[in-house]
Image (cartoon, rainbow, N blue to C red):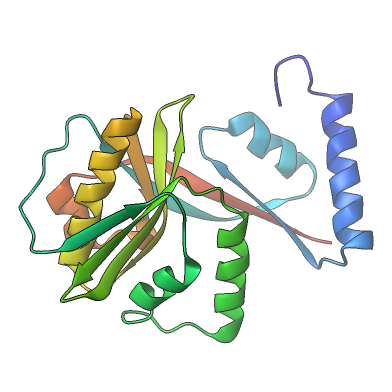
Length: 203
């Protein structure tokens, strides 16, 4: 909410969305996520009866300073669109998803305005896949979707992601802790830059 537009307008917007979610949409739970720095927004939702149900660290990498770690024998393709099937093909080899989880993931990724994807191949087989967003206004990018077979596939996809982001003028690329392999975090030099705060309320 922009300065000067808080108060009545903020309450009115919340009431309209809350009413739609509970009465027309038939939802059972209202969830909202914010970066930990957005204290005013978090306080607003807490004041509306929401509970903070979890915090997830977000790690960032300085795009301009990061150096390529090594040359990896991977074929990499960068495309200006995101394919859920490709992400799934790379992700399922290391993780088992229930049908409900897959449906939720697909619905969520369809709502994301991805700027590009990075696909890594080993012997012509897909071994890693990233879906990336970039905000030109604050030069911040985020790896939203990350599916890899091995840790070296993460590094290979990361290298090409950073190269593309440098072309776009990005300064930082972030990723949630749950999508970042521990060794890759240390090897690449990711540092904690924020937390994702989840708030929930039963409708």
